Image (cartoon, rainbow, N blue to C red):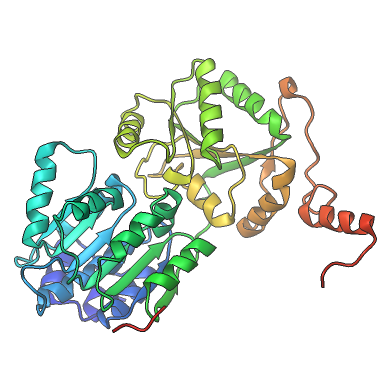
Amino acid sequence: MTFEETYLNDNILDALYDMHFEEMTPIQERCIPQILDRHDVMGVAQTGTGKTAAYLLPILSMLDDGGFPDDAINCLIMAPTRELAQQIDQAMQGFGYYLDTVSSVAVYGGNDGNRYDQEQRSLRMGADVVIATPGRLLSHIKVGNVDLSRVSFFVLDEADRMLDMGFSDDIMQIAANLPQSRQTVMFSATMPEKIQQLAKSMLYNPVMIKIAVSRPADKIQQSAYVCYEPQKIGIIKHLFATNQLQRVIIFAGKKDKVKDVTRELKRLHINCAQMHSDLTQAERDEVMLSFKAGRIDVLVATDIVSRGIDIDDIRMVINFDVPHDAEDYVHRIGRTARADRDGAAVTFVSEKDQFAFRQIEKFLGKEVEKTPLPDSVGSGPVYEPKGRTGRASRYCHRRKGRGGHGKGKKERK
């Protein structure tokens, strides 16, 4: 389906023509008509599917058609990080090239006083579109710089990342300043329980649009070490001792593990840095800038960087912990083998994670190659996700040992 087959206005279509945008992606094809018809939308789609255009194009088209107050903030777009806010702002400039009457401002932390003053002026004048990170916008709200009482469109981009980064309370505070009559669009790469609850509280009778997660690129060389939990650091040491590894991301499930792995790497004199929610926005920006510039070889991180980070030359991804589900696995290893480059993805599978990793293999439609453990760490467990080390069989074994049977949004005003 082409963009011309929708009822986006001519100014938007002219900008798309200049940018050589013709065919819509699946998420755009399904979202744009629904947003233009003024439905709330819950979109589930991974990074790289074109979701930014899926909400920006119809909203900009409606704003340009008129009927909205000139002195009000008409659209509020929330993003989890400064970097994503900047990417949305850049897309806004391209799509809005011919929209002379639609103004915008990006509001995010880590700037000097001059930038804050510019944000303050734009917010008080009523920029049509505000693209903001939660913390920075709240700071403006608290000092009276912004009036959100006439917002018509509210967009939450990468909502799951915002919750992972601890912004749940901030989002609720911001939403409390919005009118109930707004149209709300929410995008998330995954749909865990906490996102479902947020959607119920934020959206009114939403249209649910889910684009299936694509499998990882074939050029990613996937492998796994089946090991005991205490052996993981030893495997890390082996990998870095036998290879000149650079441009590596190591993912760990919890920030405490990120800190532990970073300490071990630094003891090995490996040039690394950590990324997790305990860091301030300015600290995260500095780490990402250093990693992108090649001043850091290894980034140890939680899933805070598994999506929405545009780095093309990652050589290897190491999953220190097995991700919660197949979608998280795809997002993590998708950081490598980009832009026609090769890449490797290595996962450490402990006993308790064998069942979860087997579910990932089922999603992939193949068994991931198991690499023998290095002699330096000793022998590991057998990979038997359906055997005695699997969750289901351990549960049945406990029950047999006990010899018993198991127990048996408000309407808008």
